Length: 398
Image (cartoon, rainbow, N blue to C red):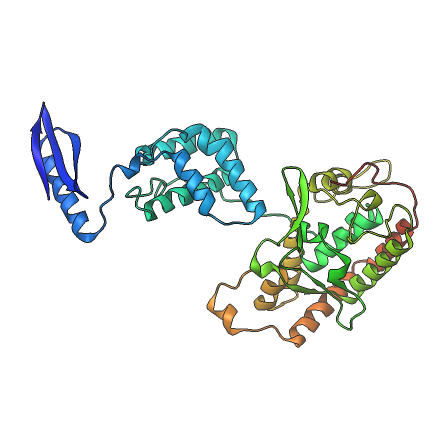
C-alpha cells in the first residue's frame, strides 16, 4: 500500500517494499502525489514495479555486468569495447541508470556524436547503448529504456559501388599475381576479406569433380584484434558454408598452388595459407589497401592506367558478386547460401538449393569471365607468378 504525506512545502509518497519503508519526495501538489501512489500500487499488483534503489546502479557497474554475461564474436567484442570506451563512458560514466533521461540521450547523439562521427557510426553507438539499457529494463533495474523512440533521423546510407567483370579483370591485372587472384576470387565467390585472408589450402578442394572452398565454422576467417592477427569463426553461423568454384577460377587456383609448392618468386612453399604476402606473411587489410587496392583503383599516368571505381572498397566485391548473381537470375535461396546470409523470409525456408541451380550459376559465372577478356588476365597472372621481384615489398606478417 502507498500513501501520501504532507512534507515541508509539498508532499511525499511513502510505501513498503520487502519490509523496507521507501520515500519519494518532491511532489508540489497532493494530486500529483496521489497519482504516483496509485501508479505504485497498480504496478505492484501487476508485478511491474521497479525498485527505485536498483536504478541507482551506475552505468559503469552495469556495463561490467553486461559485458561478463554477453557473448559475441571476438571481432564484435572489439567493436563494442571501442564504442563503450571512446563514446559511451566518456559521456555517461558515473551516471546512475535511473538518471539517464531520454532527452539527454537525444542531445548527446545530435550535439556530440554527430559533430564528430558519420551517421552510420552514431547509429551503431546508439544501437549498442540501447541494447545495454534494454537489458537493464529486462533485469528490473529501470522501468523504461531511455533510448527508445528518440525520433532521430539518420542519413540513408549511400548505395555501394559494384564493378563490371571487365573492371574486375583490369583491377586484378594491376596487382601482383597473389593479390590479383585474391581480387578475382572475391568477385567470383563473394567471400569476405577475413575468409580470404585466412583461407587455408586444406579448405580448398581443387582436385574434386566439384571444386570448392569450405569456410570452416571454427577457424574460417582471419581477424585483426588490437593489431594481432588470429584465426577464428566467420561472421555468423550461416557464414560457415561451401562455396563452389567456376572452372576458370579452379584452374587459376591450381596454378597458384603449383607456384606456392615450387617456391617461385616470393612464395613460401611451407605456407598453409592460400593468399600471403612476403615470405608467407598474412595480409593485413590496411596494408593490402595501401599497397595493392588503392593504386589499382587510382591509376598510374606513366603506365597508362586510368582510374577505376575510386570509391570502391574491397568489401564491395561482395556487392559485385551478388549483383552478378541477380543479373543471372540465380534464385534467392542459393544467393543467401553462397554469400553466407541467414534465411529470414518464409519463402527462404520452403525453397532449397539443387545441383541444377548451382550448375546454372557456375555456368553463368564462367560465361561472364569468358566474355570479359579473362583469358588475357590469366596470362598476365601467369607471367606475374614468374616475376621474382618483391612487388609487395615490406612485411605483411603479424
